Each structure stands twice: as structure tokens, then as C-alpha cells.
Length: 72
Image (cartoon, rainbow, N blue to C red; front, top):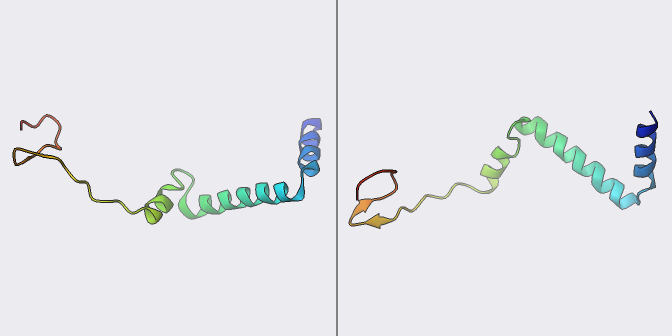
């Protein structure tokens, strides 16, 4: 119980702006967890913000060289 009290007192002694920042980060994390699921919660958001670009494969001798073990 003393540990919880000391952590609370330390948090309470922080400046108001820092407290607001910490609480807002926790709230945003909980919101994203509920929206996107706990496992890989930012994966869908990342795909939404950064859509996948088409891969450009190197061509050597007129053949695609992106497959592993493919003879060129």
C-alpha cells in the first residue's frame, strides 16, 4: 500500500501539463486498444495512414528476379 501511495504522491507532485499529457496518452492507448484489438492494435491504423505501395522488382535479362532460388 505504501508503494501505491508513494507513486500517487509522486504523480500528484508533477506539473499540471505533464499530468494532462500522461493521462491523455493512457486514454488514447485504451481507445486504440478497444478500436483495433489489443494484439497488433496499431497495425490497421498504420495501414490506413500509410497505404501499401506497389513493389518494384528488379529485372535482369528480361526475367523477374524477386522469387527466391529462381534461375535468371
